[in-house]
Amino acid sequence: MSQQQLIIYTDGAARGNPGPGGYGIVMQWGQTVKEFSQGYRLTTNNRMELMAVVVALQSLTREGLDVVIYSDSSYVVNSVEKGWVFGWVKKGFKDKKNVDLWQQYLKYHNKHRIKFVWVKGHADNPMNNRCDQLATAAADSGKWLVDAGYESGN
Image 1 (cartoon, rainbow, N blue to C red):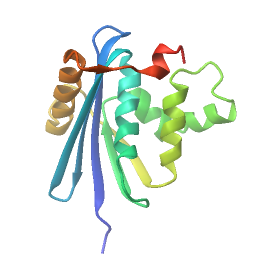
Image 2: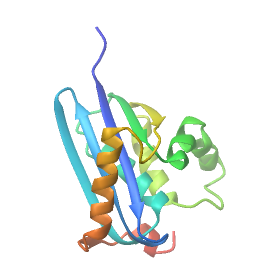
Image 3: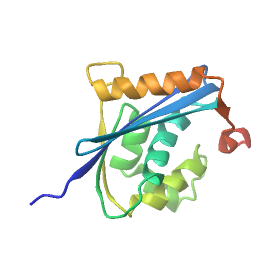
């Protein structure tokens, strides 16, 4: 019997780069679907793409899950699937951006069996499109948090 997979769709958006931004997450476990989103007053698109992944993983209450994360961010998908982030760790993240978020991601990487799948953005994937709606609505909401990692000059 195969173990059930947790399916996570993520997207990030920024109005200006940098500018107000947001992320959207849709998580599916069997028939249960949960959505999350949050806006930030000043951030970048890549940070929101990665923040969505980190927040989704932080929300998990147990370890050892089979997780498939669908993202339209080549930056996020390739950084993990092609192993770039692990090379960055060895080099102390020299000259890399979003170090705070990558370090957060790495806290969860070995707690689950995670596979990233790239999906074309703004196309025919309904869950990715829903994440885009959540992310852009959060970016436009005016109900923003401070992206301390960005604003502190990380």
